[in-house]
Image (cartoon, rainbow, N blue to C red; front, top):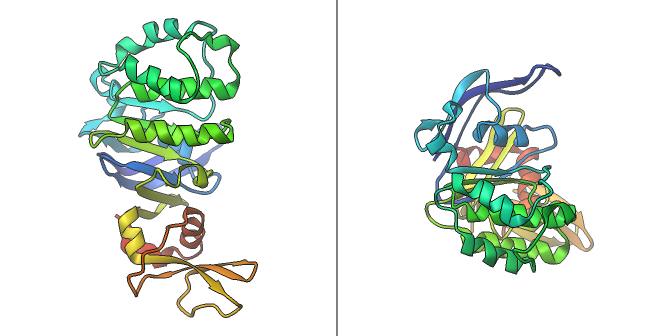
Length: 278
């Protein structure tokens, strides 16, 4: 479990205050989606959790340990795939030989299976790959580390359409009850079927922190024909012939959650989601 307790973070050069007295609990054993507008601090939060940045106030703990102490035994259980990165111009085998020993649960067989899903082979030179291919290789390595906390920032950026489907496949294969995968993305359609927990942040506030079951029980996602909108609609998006609507699920309907609609509804009417904040 990740406990973020009243943190404050400010970029010194720009004097931009990203978080003020911000708190959040992220449960264990979920594929969790972190959503927010541009500038909400999603990437910053990921770097803070992974101990690449340090806040001015407050604390962040993972499995009860303060991440900022950067103890090797704790960092061995955390891996981050940033949105932008580069890999050295060496063979994949050399990269594995150099980096895998730090992670005691690294599984080379699993990495080869993930590479195969992406239609790649272990006989690669990282310096000869496109950015999309590098991202696939890095994701495969990240999954193979066997860490308890895997963090991904915009993991589907740079992937072509078939690769996005393969990405969902490899992540599903590698998920266990002991692992937490935290994904920050704007491409919600790419990961919608993966996520079982949703966090939405805005202006240093947590607008939503709930699992998919809780959201489905509280709200329904419907298409309404014609121009007359339900009086209890929380959010409406006009479409041809009617509108897509988010409304309270007072009739216990089973509807498919639309993450884009959920996000827009939460941003537009955050008070409607107060009961699902933790």
